[in-house]
Length: 464
Image (cartoon, rainbow, N blue to C red; front, side, top):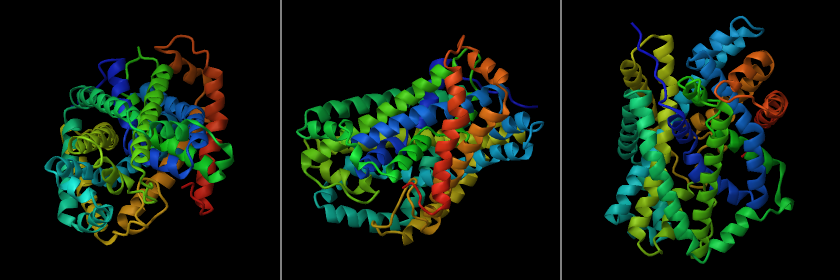
């Protein structure tokens, strides 16, 4: 006996869940950091263009495949690819998505667990005491905290427990319900922090930095990084959008949903920049060159502001909510494989896969003890391959996701026929007047852009 396949309650449920998958640490942490590294304005415009030209077309392609087959990545690519040229390659693509989800979740949950610790420290007042002295906070994070294997393991296990609990209760009763609670809360916290930012003296400077482009500052590396982040931030190439699409009703427009999700994702990334740069500029603090800015620089800035304790706690709750909605989608990708292909019950699949990933993640958590140098500590798509943690991150960000997205674009653009794709996109949408543009982008622009990222990695010139 197999369980009835889950389905979203409607368009809102799908959009909130898929937006939750896309909106995570990449928006609230990595994007402000790389925007600062790449001199703001012009980089932001290139990033928005990359979302439109690469991100949206591939998202539409992934959701299309999921809804058409009503299967997880492995089953979907197996069903559509078995009788087509290069069938073995396309069937392997589904397994690559599951591998990417497994790998990313095993270390992403470790980082997400840090938000629990820092929220608690903010509420207890300990973080404010440390943050008064930037050197002390940096030494605490890079030494005492990361080197404490027991703490790293505990917070990782706790975050995986929250993730597993949401997926355990199913598509509608777990994932969608959590998204409908957390996404509005996340939006409210962001709005509060943006409004607060407008009252700071650094708001004007922040807006000029983000929205006043100087194209003389753009480099090839900047363009590649914008392309890479546009891809990473939308949860593409890891099977998440394909899996969520498989629970989508046929009365929902795929093109409209993809545009709405991409708009929300981009808006929140820009709001995060406004918040961070306004607060940093107000305090006159030089942005740390370390990618650990979220845990080493930001608290030292926030502690100088009125209501610092509550403000810092609110900030880390925001980061934690965004991370949780992303980890849920990663676990669902892996669990859906066991449900569809191994015919396991959702409860068995979720507990087993969640448990295995948790155990593997413990190894990542413990590996941080020997990786305490802030100058070389790189996260979420940076170049470092130091230690197990860094290696897992490097493989996922620089190989699994770009290769997965590249193959999805080729498969949907060149292997699936225009009759099938047009029919699927017009179901729930009506006449899709942008079909010709989408088909051009998915066949030419998206593969070339993602291919450039892969070539840069092969040449040893990673886009970071």
